[in-house]
Amino acid sequence: MLKILLASHGNLCLGMLETLQLFTQETRHIQAIPFYTEDPERNPEAELEDFIRRLQETDTAIVLTDILWGSVNQQLMMKLNDKPQVHLITGLNLSLLLELITMNPESINPETIAEKVNVCRDSIVYMRQYAIENLDGDE
Image 1: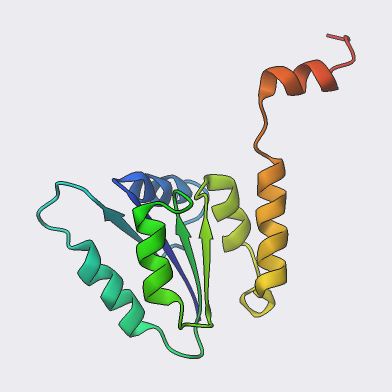
Image 2: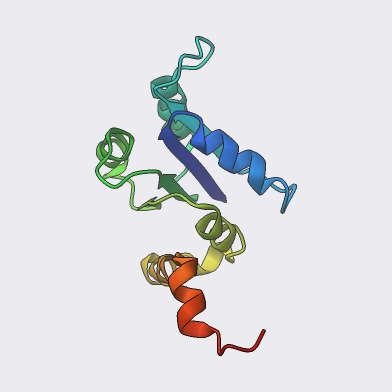
């Protein structure tokens, strides 16, 4: 089974999950864990431990964090480094999330994930420069 975990500083991951629901209602396999919030109802460390405990060897998991080498990313790296079925990606954004949820779970491997990351990296564009370089002057 494919499982996706979104983890971030603050509520970014919750907003990302909420926004994703505008595109698809099929989000039961996606969990969001916000770290460093003031919500007394949340215990992100316990939520992460629960996510890890529920992972089966036959599951494939994609974990997205917000900042490369940020504390959330580092914590997940340490907790998940012995789980070969888990793919950790940093740079959480909607384009990447949409690419990943449309993947066939059987096709998920390091190469296909790297392809999706590269496609999304190319979609990060400074529009002023892009418009100047790509418009031919016809309006």
